[in-house]
Amino acid sequence: MTTRRIRGAAAAVAMAGAAAACSAPGDSGADGGASAESVVIGIPSEPDTLSPLLGYGKDGNSKIFDGLLARDADMELKPALAKELPEITDGGRTYTYTLRDGVKFSDGEPLTADDVVFTYDTVLDGKTNNTAKSELDAIKDVRADGDDKVVFTLDYPYAAFAARTVLPVVPEHVAGGQDPNTGSFNTKPVGTGPYVLAGWSKGEKLTFKANPDYWGGAPKVKKLTMAIIADDDVRATRLRSGDLDGATLPPNLAATFEGDDGRKTYRATSYDFRAVTLPTGNPVAGDTAIRRALDLAVDRTTMVDKILDGAGRPAYGPLPVDDPWFAQDVKRAQDLDKAKSILDKAGWKAGEDGIRAKDGRPARFTLYYPSGDKVRQDHALAYASDAKKAGVDVKVESATWEVIEPRMKHDAVLAGFGSTGDPDFGLYTLLHSTLAGDGFNNMALYDNPAVDEALDTGRRTQDPADRKAAYDTLQRELVKNPGYTFLTHIDHMYVLADRWKDLTTQTEPHEHGFASGPWWNIEDWQPAT
Image 1 (cartoon, rainbow, N blue to C red):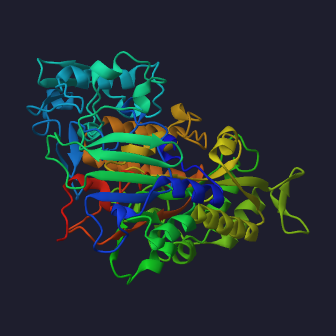
Image 2: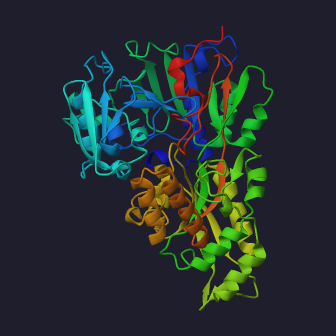
Image 3: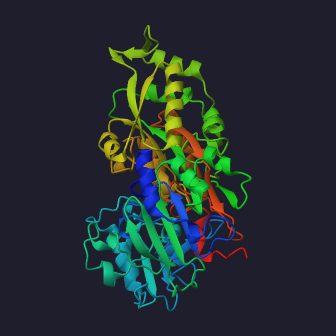
């Protein structure tokens, strides 16, 4: 959220915004005869900023920028602005990158090592409002060695550091003279990437045009429009009518396009999970017995089958069940009898209406979900239904993020998180006590010394066995005292006009639609004919 954030909107507002956002795809409809040079994609949300200094594109795949490294379809790291993968010395404390020759920003100025240094120094500056800066905690110093070499010195060996250098690089000659928090660079960026921002109508659309001088070769798709359509049903309707070339859709709506001539459905596995935050300061949701009981009361398998139409997996924690770091012994089935027993022993006694109470306080709390997000709504309602079977009354309410944000330190939220690349990515910001209540970091204000220790060990040791043991410990601790009720990991579904060949998806983070999807590498697309 910042870029994770999906802003709720009434369907009428979404429809009006979508109508203003785009014309027919390729200006000639959504059939196979439409132009392959222009693409219009419907997505549910837009970034708050297009500046990497504030977190945009930090996980890669920005259309406007490049990082030192990038990821391929198999999520393996590959050189981007760097000529090759880094040289690692000093026991994993020094990383040296050599820049690719001849790279220029879209304004024609050359990329230099000073731009890389400026980018990382600014992100790490305490005055910069980048809530993801803890992800670069290991950096002690970054310096230029001539025009084409950048040297990172780390405070400690950080096994996942190379993957952090997918962070987009910004031009010092443009952004250096601005306040990174308020400057025009946030909405008028300049980068080295395959596309240039041509226009941004907030709440309606972002338009990109191909960068003819892109170092990786001029893209065949010359114009890319991202239409902001918050409502899932409206997005599907506009795709069906031909106003969109493609869209990100929830599984049940994507399924309605199966067998549709001229369109293909894509399914991407992800680390993206849905969970209920249980803020520590809430007198009911913060109670350990309530948390444990809710964890046992939920029927995750039914949520996957009914809400996701099978396009996902039960979430027993923040890591997917098929991830190599997942601790297999934390899988657990719904167990209402055990949930009730935990509450009985903790003094939460059932009343005549079936709702429990303790010391005169009913077992009741409010759960918010963002308006317009049908998948989260369905998760929230199913969660409330399961909770009630254990005697906990969860009041489900929809609201915009502007309403939810001031409340989320005290009220539960049906939230979404998940990062790819390494267990440190996402887990640290989700759970470490030092980040409690820091924007969308650690929304539950979770504070568990054993989890903090596991996170620090996982981040600071390079030994794979020690890291595996640390993350196993973390996952088991979350079963004993879950600050979140983890529900499902979601497969991302996309539908796209079938006018290009050999399209792929990646394993995706929570943030999707804008930079993920079959268009993650749109600069490489080739027309089907």
